Image (tube, rainbow, N blue to C red; front, side, top):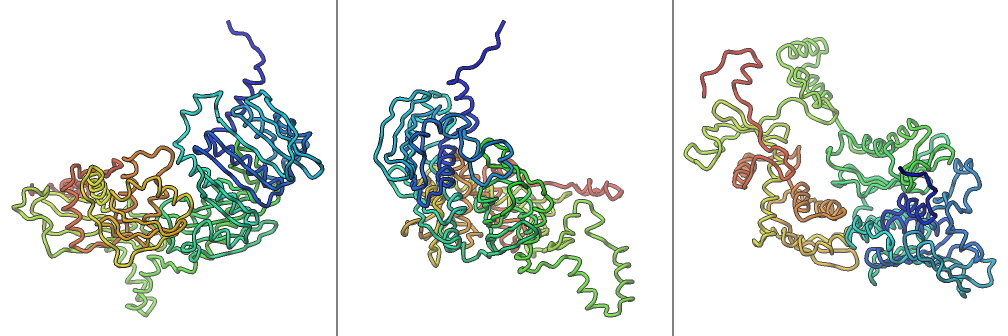
Amino acid sequence: MTYIRTLSQETTGKIAAGEIIERPENIVKELMENSLDAGATRISLTVKNGGKKYIKIEDNGHGISAGEISLATRNYSTSKIVDFEDIENIKTLGFRGEALASIRSVSRLTIASKSEKDDVGREMIWEGEKLIKETPLPREVGATIIVERLFFNLPARMKFLSSDSAELRRISSLIQKLSLSFPEVGMTLKGNGRDIISYNPSTLNERVEAVIGSGIFRNLKYFDTEMDNLRLYGYTSSPEVTRGNRTLQYIFVNHRHVINKVMGYALRRAYESVIPYNRFPIAVLFLDIPPDMIDVNVHPAKSEIRFKNEKDIHSLVFSSIREIVKGKKTISFQSKVESVYKSIFPDEKVREKSKLEMRHAYNPVTSIENYRDAKTDGIDGGFVLRESPKSLFEENDVEKPFKSTKLYWQLHDSYILIQIRGAMVIIDQHAAHERILYNRAKKNIAGANPTIQSLLFPATIELTPGEYKKLEDYSDILPRIGFEVEPFGMRTIIVRGIPAGIKNWNEGSLLRDILGEIGRDKTELEEILKRFACHSAIRFGQKLTNQEMESLVDQLFATDYPFTCPHGRPTILRVNLSDLEKRFNRPASTEE
């Protein structure tokens, strides 16, 4: 039989710390937010071993009074609220009073601080719950906090951390987010003795350009919209400038970086029918909202919030960004059809009669349920067929999987259709190209010399700190895939060559997409190759010539497993003629 008992302070401290401190990034976030709440104008951060062994933060804020340092490390001790009602009007980043207590419970913690009212500062050192040193310390106003030996008393937690490089990238990404929200604050980050980030106090324009890079910043558009007591402002990209992931989408609410589905969905909807479904706009959005209209106390790390008026927020974000996107006109399929009818039948009565007759004769979109999406604005409906004058496979070529092929077409610039005896074969052009590039990259990694296509004009690309760190971390893999890259100053590289067969280089956006995907947690080589293949492959909606379709199919069936892409999705579907005949209630054909 077990008995109910009160847990010790040490045990409860470790449990509470587990909700807030999962990795070094969480420690940096809590301490940086404390520095910002303290009014610091300069914050310097130094880490070693990805923050696992050593984290040091120095600021010039108003500091902690010498007599309050010990109190600050106790659970639920804070200067930011008095009672629960204050949370509804919170204007600071922190408010719970849990951070320092949680950090102290799982590390060796040193706090050295002095406030304006102190004659001399004070330094205190803990190991877990145990205070091991307390001494006066002459110093300037501000605070220095050092966290060492993270999880020294919870060694099992160390197993769940990523590599030093991956943890450092997380910290770097966090500093970028905080720096965007507080451009007036200078911030530096050093990792293992190297300068990684250095931002001087600046304007918002200057800070966004510093974080995202000059090349991308030139393609961002600034906006500022107000509605009732809400203000939304920031930057968003033109439809021509997108990424393969959301790594360059930043959302801030009252200067707090958050993950919010309402604002994220509204941003996505604003670009609907203008950019491909698998591409994402670049955006830096700031929402100023009265504190009593949000709930910031819904997540232990305060990374998620809840709005009281979600519909208003969605409407504000969608309408503001849609106005910018309108610069790229989109014409619906129905509008195109209407313009054709008007040119052929100027008389309205004749035109309507002709349209009615045409609908009775043939309706390629609305009569087939699977093509309902073709009615979306900006997407052409119906079938796009390109007949090839050449045969895809020769009759006597036994290495090819199909015989007696006379025609092949491209459907919706996405699927290759091939007529074979007694059936039709449909090939997903993106999945097929993924398989080709993946197999080629695997051979290169295994030791084959990569086939490189040299760029006529080498590309100079400015990377974000996180992207540049990934480039360094995977410097042994990218050249073996086929990228010829050279450093060219701080965070800038020159690309002289790219893997052969790549069509969508797009002035370096491909490499940035790949860097944005790899290196998440403990990315294995196999996963890197899959992501490289996915981002490099021919896109849906990309027109192919007859020769390109033929070459793609030939290369697909030269791979070791042509029937699926590297992620396991099928590349090929076969539709038997007998199945079609059944659908049309026709007698079975005698063709074999």
